Image 1 (cartoon, protein in one colour):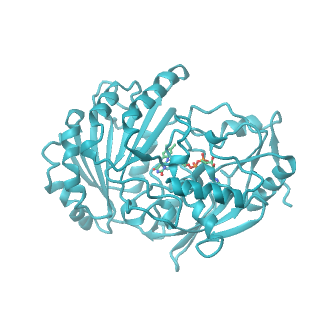
Image 2: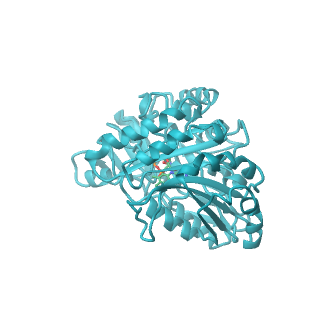
Image 3: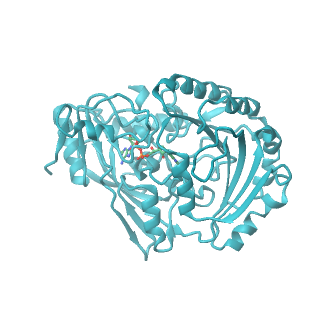
Amino acid sequence: MAKIEILERGTSGYEEARDDVVWNGRTPGRRPDAIVLATGPEDVQAGVRIARERGWRVAVRSGGHNFVGVSLRDDGLLIDLSRMRKLTVDLASRTATAEPGARTEEALEQWRAHGLAFGVGHCPTVGLGGFLLGGGMGFNTGAWGFGAEQVSAVDVVRADGELVRASNEEYPDLFWAARGAGPGFFGVIVRYHLVLQPDPAGLTSHSYTYPLGALEEVVSRLDEVTDQLDPAVEPMGWIGKTHGHDGEPDPESDRVFLLNALAYLDTPERSLEALAPLREGPLEDLAVERTVATASFKDLFDFQRLLYRRARYAVDCIWTDEPPATQPLADLRDQMNAAAGDRTHALWQLPFGNYRGSREDMAAGDLGRYYLALYSAWEHEDEDAENIAWLRRTMQPWEPASTGHYAGDVDLLATGTRSARTLSPAKWARLQELRAVHDPDGVFHHHLETE
Ligand SMILES: Cc1cc2nc3c(=O)[nH]c(=O)nc-3n(C[C@H](O)[C@H](O)[C@H](O)COP(=O)(O)OP(=O)(O)OC[C@H]3O[C@@H](n4cnc5c(N)ncnc54)[C@H](O)[C@@H]3O)c2cc1C
């Protein structure tokens, strides 16, 4: 068995390691008995075996970006994979491997250096581990699908400490769960095997800015346009305060509705052509500002770095099949105008690019056509209650038509059913059956609020 260093509670290094686990400034106070800073699969195997011997439950952390800090649990062992960041690429087969601690930007840059790409998430520092395990809503979902759809196999340390490869051919149940189970997975993924895409060298961004008062009118015209778009065009709505070049929101500005579409074609000309339904359709005349420009992934990451500066966050989301025109837009507009934090914003996938109805081959992926996520952001602890209450209040009118939640952004503590609703009822039931088979002794922590 590999010799590993275990940082036990009360010993030197434990507090620093614990404080580093959660990216959200609103880090929960939960404390594991011990933390292992794993550097390779053998450390993970040793960690799982030691946890079994000592009767500890196991929690896992990759990039630490889960908003409710789900990897921090009271008691048991935390296996921290943030040092496992190795990336490889095979040019002949256009495939890659990634360790789970690898971050979005470093991975994409390494693959793009070879003319290849992958549907990583939009934020540069998110860990591939949690992102892919929850499904992964990354770049170009319309053409490339969820991140998890671009995974061909995973290497998993199971509850007995064995390291196995799971794919559609070997351990298909484990592979099914690894593509969507999110924080309720019953194993540790130590390596992802990925299928890469050609780099979309003609990446182009098209933005319209509208006054928030025009929200209902713009949204009522949306379907007419989005139905005509190429799958490689990703339309996203955003509501928030305008940001200056320093990335700071202008506190005096009114919130606006921004409609941004990214076209991921191989030349700027083809991207512009794919964006024509936006220019030529009914969304043009209401816009107060228009920007069309070639874009780079670096620009997109830089923007995200500014938007998601480290602060205190509460985030929640829903999937819905309710068409945009009949969604509770007036409530959303009023609540956005009333939001306290200048950085608080809403993000909307209109529709979510990859929605193709039910799919059985992976746990993630068939919950709804539209996606709304709310990000409440603020600075000081004494503002927690106000900002969390705003989030829950704003989400309320959306709940009746909600078909579920996305594992990556869900506020697991909002209700007792959030985790279960990250999958369809049938898939959730299957996940529990598989958990009983693959982790009969309950070595791994369950979803947060079901414990
Ligand atoms: C600023 C920001 C921007 C974001 N942008 C996007 C985006 O564009 N698209 C998107 O889809 N999501 C996005 N997210 C959500 C993000 O993808 C999820 O929160 C994801 O879980 C983060 O992965 P992580 O490895 O960093 O998280 P962690 O907090 O380390 O992991 C979350 C949980 O997943 C499980 N887990 C993680 N890795 C493993 C593993 N290797 N084996 C077993 N279990 C594991 C554990 O239960 C762990 O507690 C964003 C989050 C933030 C904070």
